[in-house]
Image (cartoon, rainbow, N blue to C red; front, side):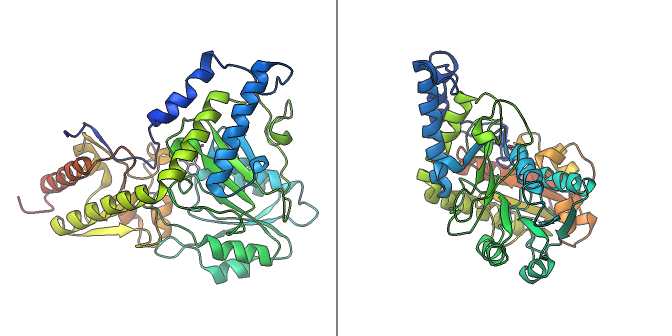
Length: 387
Ligand SMILES: Cc1ncc(COP(=O)(O)O)c(C=O)c1O
């Protein structure tokens, strides 16, 4: 098989819609176009049945109940609802939330907004691997703490959080636990019951579904969690997220979740192997290659490396036929060093020379070997290895 060019190694930014997912979606644009809220006739009822099927498929991916899945426009909106939406219903209990410095901007900017509204926010630091310290988390909890929001997996360095321990601590203290699982869901097993997760953000376009659709899982039992809306209107999605449901996207999201669940184990092993191969080969041929993030507690499909003494922008300029990134997609236009890599404590230089390579369902071994070759070639040009 010949390698397609450019080789796409940016699956943490977005994934292609799987062809099986696209096929499931297509009838819903024109033939089965009903409004899922128009249950007085067959068109609406059919749309509603399809939405409910998707709800089941997504609930199954995270071991939730279908009525706990609230459709949103993506993980950004889910994160906004999770943070801003707990402030009002839990104001009688307190005004303090805990999050972490390496979160996605959808969390950090929502937290800043809460601060503007007079709430208090603790931003926990992370260790050199990108994980929060559990003792620091325990110490940060006060009787006024209403929410802990710690991401399941970091979008830049791939580090996975100790979700089980965080969930246990949150539950012991009666604090709501939200996790941004945009990068994690569909790639590693996820069980909101076993992990004591109360709120969870998912995005379809990170798991081979379409863009512009996501979900917020909201625990409805043991204990019931309440969130107030940030968008108001017709009362869709139990009043948490008004707006006519995007049925084709929801159907695609459901199908994508089901395929991810079915293929998760095999795919994780394959992609983990690809990342290990890239790291081994680059370390063998180029001096000063360092892994960013946790060596084992990490996403199977993400690799973030620093090549000491280089700048990521020089690399990216040379690698015009390999699509990779210097940081997160949302920060790609931002010349500032990544707040995530800076938070690991190695200085800004390491952040400015970091590269994120992420593999996925359509990646082949040929793609991987081609990219390895091109990165080694680029380092030769940048005079890092003898010609
Ligand atoms: C960790 C994390 N949270 C939130 C988002 C935002 O997701 P969406 O694009 O669905 O709004 C992303 C996507 O870049 C992400 O990686």
